[in-house]
Amino acid sequence: MTQNKTSGFTLMEVMIAMAILAIALVAIFKLQSQSISMSTDSRFMTTAALLAQSKMVEAEADSTLANHSEDGDFGLDYPQYTWHLEVGDTQLPQFKKIGVAVTNKLFINRGTYTLVLYKTTGM
Image 1 (cartoon, rainbow, N blue to C red):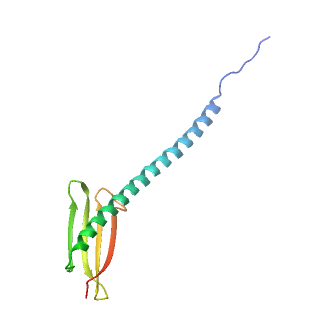
Image 2: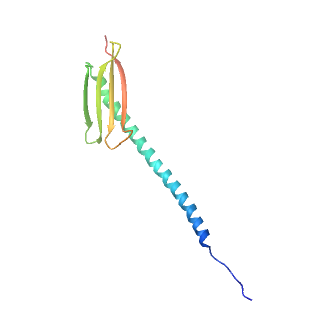
Image 3: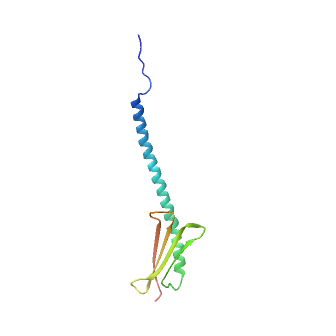
């Protein structure tokens, strides 16, 4: 009288369990990566919008609004961000177009935020 007890898992069961685990982990890591990417993009958009608005306020305060273009950075507070300001004419002579583009040097794609304002010249 011998009893043949089989306890434990077969090799096939272990391989199937490992495959399911691997698929689940890949999906979780992909979701985590997307979450980090979206968080970084959101932080850039918020910071760039605030910096562009501050530069736009400076340009808008300029009473002459002469056509010109200039570049610069935001100093030590935001070393990776640069700005480009352009004031130009529009098709209507009483309006000027003020454009501010803020760029993050660390971003390869989608690293530029542009803000445009049309202002009357007071004519």
